[in-house]
Amino acid sequence: MLKYEIYVKDIEEMIQRLERQLKKGRINFDKDVDSYDLIVLRLQVIGQAIKEIPKKILSQIPEVNWRIFVSFRNISSHNYGAINKEIFVRILKREIPILKKNIKKLKKVLHDEE
Image 1 (cartoon, helix red, strand yellow):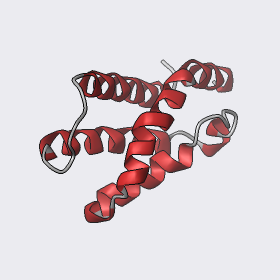
Image 2 (cartoon, rainbow, N blue to C red):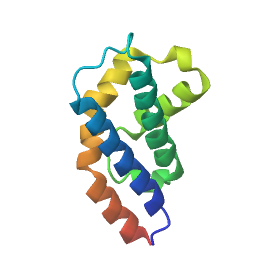
Image 3 (cartoon, rainbow, N blue to C red):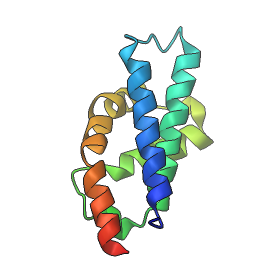
């Protein structure tokens, strides 16, 4: 088992859960606070997992905006009320698909580093 494999598995699982939840249809984040909270939690898990992987490894995959995930995790964990909804939606619509597309590349880089 690769040293960082558990973090990649966390990322993959959270992406799958996010996709299942978002397939249910448009979520009104102001009225459906439970769904909002679930999505925030899943993004926090992704951000924390990314935070645990060395920057040296992440820098080999510049297509992914790693910083936005870690920054979102920090803000949502320490100052929940300061979550920027525009960035939140951008992460869901743009950054998650890019991350998902690059998971195989991340696994390869991690494997090559072992």
